[in-house]
Length: 273
DNA sequence: CCATATACCTGGCAGC
DNA sequence: TGCTGCCAGGTATATG
Image (cartoon, rainbow, N blue to C red):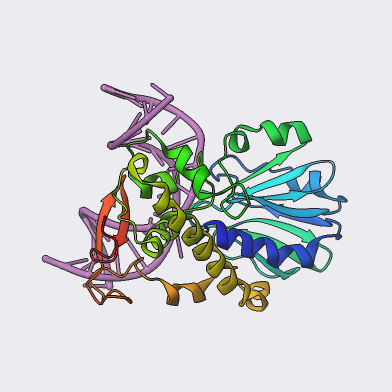
């Protein structure tokens, strides 16, 4: 579920509902996430007011002034807003209560993480955040920047796009989708891609991510009661998960292959050198 | 430094 | 029905 668009939709879903509210309590259940979940977290948060909800890559940062709750949803995590007292289901690991509402972390595979960081310094220099790449929806992410950043790299462009040390937020789905929109073969060595092609790729990445955010945004009403997944965007996939199905543009069968242990999907006709 | 493989964890599904 | 193997949207870490 959670690549940049899903995390951003989650941010937009919870921020207007919870910013300005004070934590009244909470519960931790399974401590065993990717990093140990502090059992005393509810006690640490109690009485603190949520000041802002920010996003950096696929991380959510809940700013409580005296500290920041850093949340990563891993492969299968989601946050839901529920009425206080809603019975927990399997894999509900953390509740943070804000009066009569609660924010609940659900994560079956437990690749997610929740960390409490207490100093601004620590946030900037935290090992999980310090080496993150550029934000693809911000101004600095330009064709020229990406061109320069990939010179000398032999890695296939698909795998580089998924490397959060270069550019954050692009996961397996949106890497394939963006390359399709840019009509670039996912196997192409990044360092051999000319500027002209990055002039297609950068807008393609932006358009793909923004369309997914919009699709999720259109279901924000549902988010309050559900899980923040931008389910509607799946109907817009051009290649992801469509092996053997006809390309929406040229009709040729979509192919799949494996790159770095991950599935890649592409159109053999539209995405040619 | 670079590129690739591995590990973490659970659930759903195809195939037998 | 139940078993087995494989797959899944992430990423730090280990290994060449």
